[in-house]
Length: 242
Image (cartoon, rainbow, N blue to C red; front, side, top):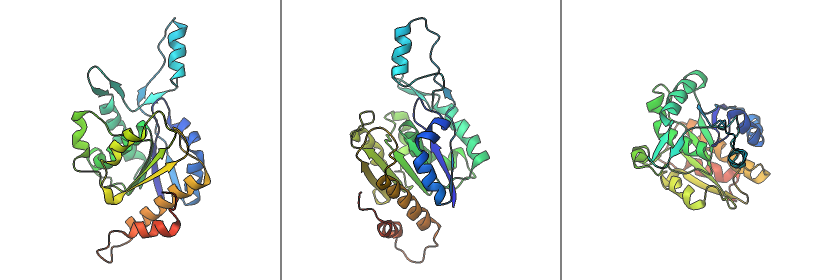
């Protein structure tokens, strides 16, 4: 049916996220969607340190020699260092690998996917707006210099997937991104797990069903003034766990 851009989390890579989201990717392949997994341009390599305790601490945070990020937050300067590099990288990647129907992001990748929903036609002028975005454990940038990204509100249909046991990105933090999306085109689904992409049958059916219904509604030619067609399609597929 189309192509989907998968954006990995902080300290991950495209290949690692492909493995961690394998169940979702395979379920989408059955619906004739293909997945693309870029790797963030910011390398988070471990420092060449003689202090084994420092290295062990970083490794405990999930950072190793293959780790990457879409930006690194400088707390002192209140800045997302490297975000400009990410925009340039994605502009080229989307030009070469797109177009994409939508995006799936996890954690920092979900934050980026939210930004991309409002910025896609700016960084890639020939690319159409996304039809959807699935945001796992996402969050909004708290930095004031990024307020323009969320004003006006994100109008792309979004599915926000939260983990009830997520201790990395809290529900309150995810709500900052939820609130940055238009209420009539956003859906929230909570799974009984932590900070990961769930692979249970219920979660997979919910996410793939929503994507299918949303793309179908986007592709359908409008015949009436009813803007709730995607909701009725989603209900018919089954959204009882939302």
